Image 1: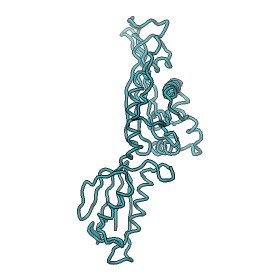
Image 2: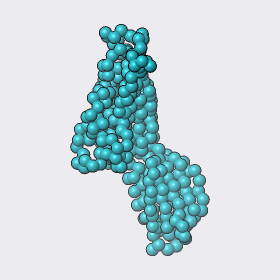
Image 3: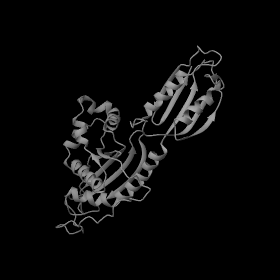
Length: 322
């Protein structure tokens, strides 16, 4: 199975530098007749530290609040060119890529494409795509008397947790050319190998050792429970029962501290996939913890089952017991 990625791109900003009289200033720049070819780039690292199967990537445009996710690409030719060139660079390096516009056009509810639901839509796109990694592509095209330039910012995120994996900034340098495609290649190609190697190394670590989450289990106000309350048939202290379950459902973990009212796991390395091969998202993992806690009962009063609520914020799960 080949893992998956997302890419993000920033709408263009166009500026013209003029003299006080409003005339363009003469300035030296590379030959305007021809834009030098993009330097050859060595293939990305294929050492044993890389996975044999690489993540799949989807180019996803950066968008500002209130922008329509489809129009931000369809109404901006330069945006389409930048996305296409970056996608092409990933394809050439052996990565499978997904088409962003096809995903957006398949959305049935058009009113979620704008405004207030922007953040929810990003999550929806990432989760529905089956992507392993989201790569945000931000670009700026600038015209000036000394030449035109494209700058590109690449940011890679692990899709299920939005954890940063890699980031790079590249610039084409100034040329007397309006060929955004060539300028984009000159900006992106020199930084892509370092970007991909760091991304792949961190992604490989996640696949092998689990992704990072944290967990805080506390007691509701007025609860008669403590972390020393004996639970289950084994009569383990509540904090111990939690640790046993976590140990069986993570690749590794670290406990920050245990008090009478709270147990905090500051590091959980959780498998990316469940036993059926489906993505184990933070919310699904939180649901598994919820089900376990709801199955607990106090040893002294077996009919006294624990009542549990949960809250997920980013990569942190909060469980409250009553």
